[in-house]
Image (cartoon, rainbow, N blue to C red; front, side, top):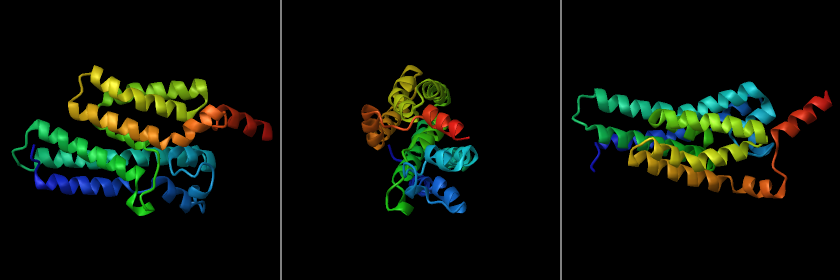
Length: 216
């Protein structure tokens, strides 16, 4: 399938937007470099642990929007630019931009191709292309984290199951492939978390809250 040349420009822009390190920017605004504290990750979980829920939520939203905005932008352009573009070509363009934004977050051009673990940006991707699957995954994530206390367990489980949800919901082959691709990368990025889970040293939200409460 041959895409309009402008689509490739959108894909590059999506990668550059996805590369913006939201958590690092917000943390540095407070005088903290989160790469040198906590887990060293630039994502919402580490920001929340170090700087509180407000900045954590802002990081989560910002990382999700890095995918949502480029994907909606390419969709709007192809639909309203007056070009004769078929629906499956639009879908492929949007999917490619989502994948590029996700890769940008994980392998940021601005951080020497280092980055976050991709969960929030992946959420943004699937909110656009598979909203029902994204909702199911979000609810599952919240439940798993609430009952287990481990963010990593919730992240790994929803990453593993997203492909299944999309397939069961008759998602397009583009979406199924992207979900599988994203899931594999998220698992690879969580390699250290998996080791800590087996070793019993992974950070647990319930334990952390208990410690903070006792400290007061």
